[in-house]
Image (cartoon, rainbow, N blue to C red; front, top):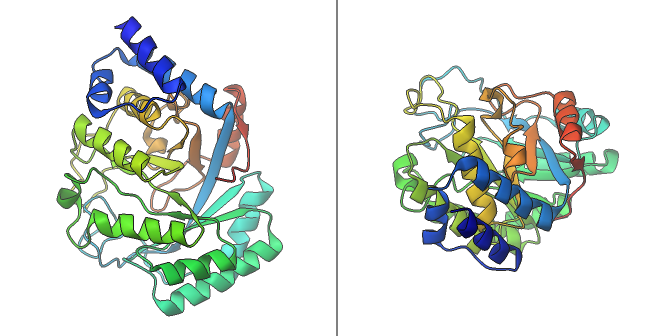
Length: 324
């Protein structure tokens, strides 16, 4: 087994693309050895660069979509706060706060299937003000916009669009039925056509199989996604997944390691659910992950920026402004 792992790692380093059967075989190997090999691949392709971002819940609740994991869906009874699109002053204030603490990337995330034309105009003005006053990269997650709307976002100063595929193509209909995964892929392609980089990943622990996870990773590779958030489901009371079992740190390390074999050059980002881990993601950052969301999550508490910088320094990472 050790020889097989070493051989596949070397092939990846030389440019080989891991196929589905090889990835499934990785899932049968001892997790610790797999994680060491994955981290060596990360080191080879990405060095010690670390992409750190923070997010702000720019518009909350009353979402028309029925994603089963989400506290913001109007289909479920949760305690999430609802409010309309935040004003420029608040978005600017939070951008300044994060920039002053060394966070190079700031993402504005909004609930709903997509922003309205009026909301797009409003938030584009906010982005312009942020870019005029703060040295920080602005990313956005505004739902299923059209290419023309993404052009406006790009011209306002944003550099990246986020839209998670959430699960494999085969499993997605079990997660959401009010839109399709293809809708999400079309939005990502529209954003790329507008000159924006794309960020997309998934949620682990929805009930999917390892094969589903690998199918997702291969889809992301085919889309040439450079930033891949890996979320661990936080089962939220009132949602259909409230009784799902939480994944373990070992589960997450294994998933991230396999994603690293499939996506050797990507910034694999430990995202939602990290605050549930006793080690705050430390082992995952030694298993192939080299990016994270810091601060508060959308509807759950995260880990402080100061804590993250201290941990990343101890692990030998250098937080940088990544231009991908």
